[in-house]
Every structure is written in structure tokens, then in C-alpha cells.
Image: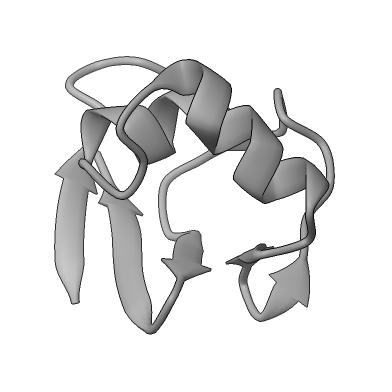
Length: 70
């Protein structure tokens, strides 16, 4: 499991998280993957591209997990 640090921010938007962690090559690609239902947040499919991901949440895509930390 990969860790992503918020670095003082309250949250990161889902499409930005995918881009910043390298799970998606671009923000546009990330938005398409989310809209296609390929991304889960805490085990549930998430279709909102700008969903606010906060500390403790786990985002999964193609068998790769990212846990958000402070």
C-alpha cells in the first residue's frame, strides 16, 4: 500500500490524487477512469471526480491502494 501525505491540506480531490500518485497519467485520464467506475474509495465505487479525499481514506485502482495520511 502506498501512502500519500496531505502536507497540511485538509483534503485532496480524487482526480488530483490519482494524478499525483501516478495511478493516472493526467488529470483528464483520471476523470475518465473515475467516470467509468474503475476507482473505489474505502471499498465503494466513487463516481465524483472532485470527491474530497481526507486523512485515513483508502483509494484503490487496478489492485493498487493509496492510503491518505496527514
